[in-house]
Image 1 (tube, one colour):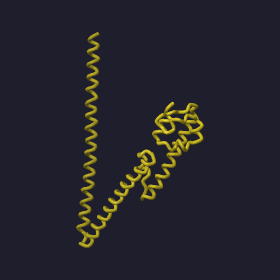
Image 2 (image 1 turned 120 degrees about the horizontal axis):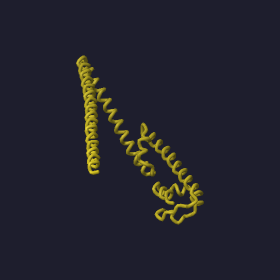
Image 3 (image 1 turned 45 degrees about the vertical axis):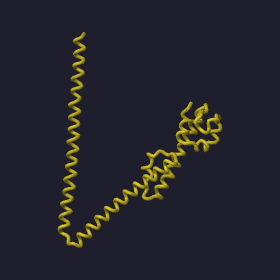
Length: 185
């Protein structure tokens, strides 16, 4: 019997040791793949730089200045766009937070400018609140027992009909309070 236990232990050790080399091989393959990707990217950029240098060598001074000016102008526009997107994202998250909408939706609200972003936030907020209200109604109508929660402003209200007829009052609660009311059985 002891001999069988020793064999089982030995087999377990062999299995563990077998997975380690596979993991190392996988890691090595992944590193090799990443290294190849980096080399390709490097060679591509190097080739682009050579082509640009060749192009510049064929230009006169005025053409070179114009080329450099256009290149800087494009870079400036790219940076301005990045800054705009960053600012719009911050503003979108601020507004979504004020409206108790999950901040994860901010990426879906970014538009070309502040006006479009605000419009997308308004649409999303309306859709989100409508979905919440429908979920609340479905939950309340499907449940004969009225949830109670002493931590809400509506702790004294225990009548299901109140929630059915005054869903706007329920909608005024924060999402956290609504969830507590709905989840408490």
